[in-house]
Image (tube, rainbow, N blue to C red; front, side, top):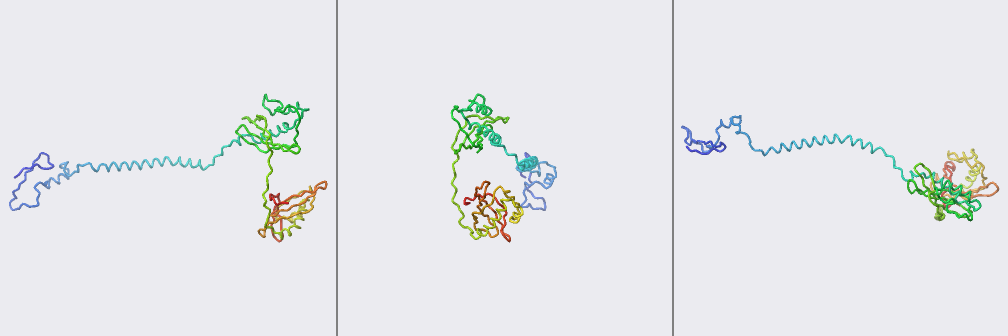
Length: 334
């Protein structure tokens, strides 16, 4: 018999009987240190709380991982549930077009300032040293308090304009703008810049002395006369348009209805008398529809004659008909 310290039993010692029981041989594979079968069963069934239980803590972290994943899923669901109504609300707001913010030109009363400057210029650009006092009285409603009554004129000489027109309004901010005017004095064109101030109530005043600027320059037209003309169609339309414009001059609705392609053409109501169609320009194009230019000679009251150019949209049925008539922008009109 031998004594050894039993592993897993603390201070207990195990007595191993090495002498086999009578009639039995000692098995070579038997482990003298194995726990007896009753002890094993007792450990599994709870006899010894330490037997049959895994005492390590290495698997506990899986529990915490599972809990973390569960809480993450719950948080995602909560966040999405709270965010969804706000997203729908903001989407509806973005779908509704917001009113555009008014610019500085929308805030400044441009139309009123143009009319105001026009009335001012009609007085400012007409003066005579014999009527200086009357001019000063007429200017007073347009000028700021304390300004020179003649607004820069030295009361010598004179100026007279035949017409004044508003050419544009240059808005600087919500209260200030420069109104540009075109005026004609005999054979000269004048361009006048008038500074206008508008307060929040809409009241206006000429805020500073005006300035004369160079008149507009004359533009040069491009040389783009029709090169590929349909001379056969021009010859065909010449007599037709002669009859049409004769009815057009007198507003003969019965005749005009026969010449029109279902559109209503009113005519000139005998303000002029038809003389002739001087020229027809028809570029080549589709056989069923063309846009042509016609130069017409009118006789005015008193016997004078005036040439004018028209653009006509022609439609071909059994014969050519006029769908529309208007002024032309073609530079090749005679």
